[in-house]
Each structure stands twice: as structure tokens, then as C-alpha cells.
Amino acid sequence: MRRTVGVAFVALTFLAVAVAPAFSATTKPVVYEVPVTGVVDPLVARMVNRGINQARDAHAAAVLVRLDTPGGLDSSMRSIIKAIQRSRVPVICWVGPPGSRAASAGTFILIGCPVASMAPGTNVGAAHPVGITGDVLSTKVTNDAAAYIRSLAESRGRNADWGERAVRDSVSISASEAVRIHVADLLAPDRVTLLRTLDEHPVETAAGPVNLHLTGASIHVVHLTLGESILHLIDDPNIAFLLFVAGIAMIVLAAIHHGIHVYGVVGLVLLLSSLVVFSVLPVNVAGLVLLVAAFVLFVVDLKLHLHGAPVIAGIVAFVFGGLYLYNGAVPNARVSRPLVFALAAVFAGLFFLAVRAVMRSHHAPLQSNRPVAGSHGVVVRDLNPAGVVRVNSEEWTARLTGDAPAPAAAGTSVRVVGMTGLTLEVVPDAVDGEARPAEPGAEVSR
Image (tube, rainbow, N blue to C red; front, top):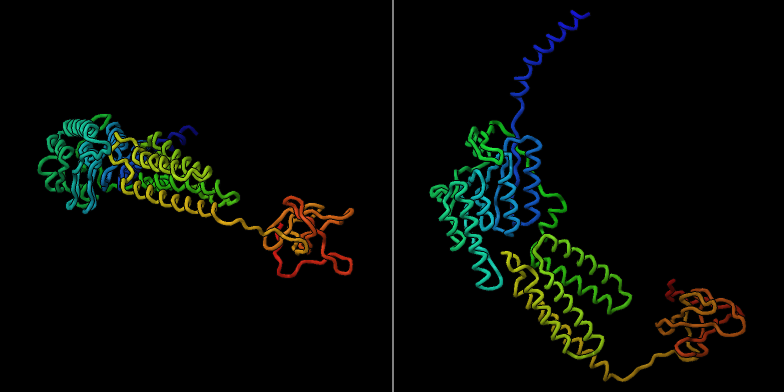
């Protein structure tokens, strides 16, 4: 028995040694591709972090960050660069396919990447930060960005002088020029060519230099989650501003017109959507307070009939709230000024028309459409003895009169015999001593 077990063990050992090389030869390296397309925002930064972590856990051969972006938030850009710098998996950045660009924040990411590659027909540059609150702040932000891109370029052995010019002078260059002046490392028209060119190439990582093994590598693409994709589509500062303003306006409309619940529901959905989008944008709380205060002033004017003074204050609060809704120290985060002033003009016009309507109603003659004795109606809500009836297309509170009257069900025809305050006194229409049902076309609701 021992001899049989020993022979089997030796045979299995030799089999494992023989099969292992064949198995390893069939195992292809995997490259995780993280597409940074569109605006660089917190959602994209979260996806890049997730992709690098997944590549680490899967022991991937490399991470390919594909760039095609006009730029984005400074904070999100720095988060992506930090994730690349602390990655233990080799990271390759590629501006592609042809026609793509790495502008503004994309320039920083490309220059700060261990391997910077570009496809022919792409460009990089125009990295000047766009501020919204004047020269002093803009100068401070520009100086900070220039120092940051210079440090990134120097750490990667790239052209730091051009990087600073891209920030200060918004210069932009083609892919071939970027390689010529040592802003990028190489040209690659597609992913296959890029991976083949970089095979056995040493790349710096947080764990030290790593030689790439990319022969026959398969590509696993990391995507935004469904929720991130939706937010990424609507996380524009202007869209978030419109959602917030529309939500507040609908809720105010529901409060003014009692009983119109659809306005309140729609307004609440819009308001919550705006708050979700605000969570990924650099929102200034003072701007939100000013916008809410503007609508409070609008309602005060309508309720108290002050004819303009609160509206003027509300329009001023609305304009300043829109202009200062986002943190001015963050480039590219602002509400379009034409949009703010256009909406302010719309609200001013609407409230001007509302004030005129109120003034006309004050000077209009008083009209009364009270039912008179002998008018006929139909029971809308059972009279037992009180309920609701519809007379002359209007609903009134009503009460059955007489000694111990029998209840009148909805749909029963009644006749007005008097009125106490705003309560009608009614009796059922009788046919041969029995209550007469309403006409077939009468509307009845419970």
C-alpha cells in the first residue's frame, strides 16, 4: 500500500511539473483600462481609484488610463494623480484614439503619469485655470497650478518649462510635438501598438520599478456604475443650478395653490436631484441660502401684497446666489452669468404680471354666485345629515333639514331651501314620496 501511494505521489509530481509550463503559457496578462472621458469630476476620480484597486487585487499587468477630456475640477484631477502615484501596479496614460485631447486637467494627469503616450492626431495643453472672482484669486490659483505641473514634470523627467507655459499662457501642442519636446514619451496609434511597444519596458510604481509583461495581454475595461453614469451626465454646474431653482419654484407653487400635489411632488424630486448633484460639486452654502431667501421674498410679496419691494430684494438675492453658488477658488465651477440674469429677468416679469393681476382683482366688482332657495343640486358626499353637494357647478357644505331626516346618499338630487352662513339647507327632491336620483349626466365623486 505504501509503495502504491509513493508511486502515485511521484507520478502526480512529475505530471504537475510537466503541465505547469503549459498552463502558465496559456495564461495571458490582463490590462485594466480606465477611460477618463468627458469632464473630470469626483465620479471619474472615484472610477479611476476603483479601477487601480481592482487591478491590484487581480494582479493585473498594468493599468491603462485613456484620456479624452476638456478638463474638469482641480480637486478631482489631483485625486486621480494621487491614485496613480500610489499605485503598485504600473500605470500607462494614453491620449487616444486619434481626435482625442488632454486639455486642462487632462494635461496634468498626462504629465504626472509614469508613461505618457499619445495617438497621432491628438493634442495636449491649454491648462490655464479658469476662475470666476477677479484677478487676485485668479493669480493665486494660476501660481499654484503652475508650481504643481512643474513639480509633476520634474518628477517624471519631462519638460517642466512647457508645462508651466501650458498653465500660464494656455498653449497647446500636437502629439508629435509633445514627443519631440519631451512632454510625452511616445506615439501609439492604438492600444495594441502601445502595449506591444511597452512590452518589457521598466515603469516606476509606488513599490519600485516594474518590468512590463504585456505580450498577448487582454484588456478589461472599467466603467462607471449606473448611478455614477447618470450623475456624470447631469453634474454640470448649470444643470444643477436649474434643477435646484426649478425644484424650489415648484414647491413654492404647490404651497400657494393649496391641493395641487403634483407640483409639490415634482418639485421635491427636482430638489433632491439637485442636492445629489451638488454633492459632487464645490457648492458654497451662502449661495444656496441666497437662492432660498429669494423665493421666500417672492412669496412674502404675493401673500402680503406689498407690490414690488420684496420682489426687488428677491431678484438681487437670486442673482448673487447664482453667481456665488460654487466655490470661486475651484476652476471651471460656475453658473453661466447669462443664465443667471436671464432667469432673474423671467422671475421679475412673472411677478410683475402677478402684481398687475392682484391689482385688477382688487378693483373688480364683487360678484356672488350663491345658490338661492329652489336651486337644485346633487349630493357629492353623503348627507348624514351634513355632507357636500354640488349646486351650479360649485361644491358647498350642506345639511339636511326637517325632523329626523333620512340620510341622502351620494348621487341623490336635492333642493336648496335656505342658507345658514356658508352652509346650505337642503331637502331631497321627492318623487312620489321617495328621494329622486340625480340625472344620468350628473358628476359624482367620493
